[in-house]
Amino acid sequence: MSGMKRKGPSRLMESMQNRVEELGDSFISSGSELKHSFEVKLDHVEPDETQARKKFDQAPLNELAASLKEHGQLVPILVRAHPERRGHWIIVAGERRWRAAKLAGLPVLLAIERASDVEVVSLLENLQREDLTPLEESAAIVALMEKKNWGQREISKQLGRSLSDVNGLIKIRTMPDAFLKAVLTSENPVSRNLLIELSRLPESNIRDRLCNEALRGELTIGKLRQAAQEVPKDGQSGKTKRVTQKESLSGKQIRAFSERVKSLAFDEIKPNERRELQNLAEWIRQHIK
Image 1 (tube, rainbow, N blue to C red):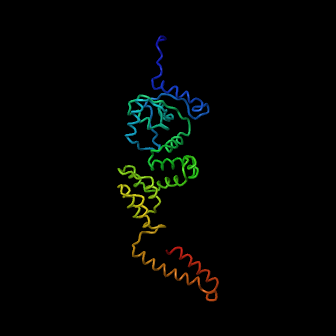
Image 2: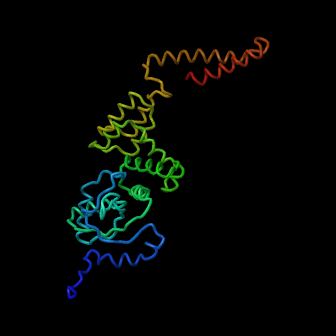
Image 3: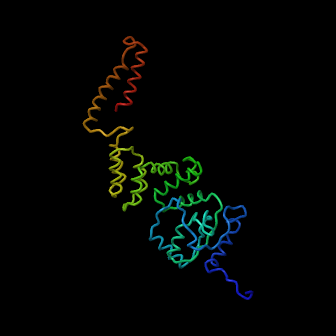
C-alpha cells in the first residue's frame, strides 16, 4: 500500500488553487467568519429554503452552465454546515451557480464555509443582485429588518439605497396575499413601479380592478394614476357621482355660512360663542371639500 500514488486534486480544485491563495489573508484571515475552501459534491449541497430568491430564469441558467463547462468555476459558493446531516451543506450565497453546475453535469463545486450570521449574509447577498423580482426584494428587506431589528433608515443605509426606495418595497408587502401570489405566477410581469403605486392606494373596488388589470398586463403607470383620483380617501366607501355633486352643493352652503360667522361683529355675539363658532367653521372647512 505504501507504494500507491496519492490521488492529486481534481482539475477543478487545481484551477482554483491559485485564485484562492492570491486572496490570502484579506479573504480568509485568522479572525474571519469565513473558514477553509474545499470541494463539495453537488448532491451534498442544498438550497436554503428561507432565502428570498425563489425564481431562476432558465435561459440565464443555461448560459451560466455553458460558461462553467468551458471556463470552469471562477467564484466559490458560500455554504454553512447542515444542522442535521453530517457532511452536507446549505447554500448561503451562490444557488444560481449550484443550479447551473447541475445542468452542466459537474460533479463538484468549490465552496467556502461561513461560520456565523449566515442568514444576514444570504439576505444581503440576494439584495445586492440586480435580477431579483420586486416581491423577492420586498421579502428579503422585511426579513433582514426583522433579523437585525433595523428600522427603514438603518436598512437603507446598509443597502446603500434611498429611504423612499426601501419604503416603497416594504409597502408592497401590505397588498393582499392572493394578489401577491398571483403576481408570482402571472404570465405578465408586474413592474416594481406598478406594485409600489398600487400598494399606496387604500382598499377599494377601484384598487381591486386595477390589480386585475395589472395581472392581465393592461395597466400602465399613467392609467393607474388617472384611476387613483377616483379612489375614496380616508376609508370612505365609493359613492355615486350624483351623491358627490349633492355633497358639493352642501359644502358651498356651509362654507358661505362659515364666512358669515367669521364676519360677525363682536357686539352681535358673545366672545366665547364666537370662538366656538369660528372653531366649528374651521372644522367644517377642513372636512367639506
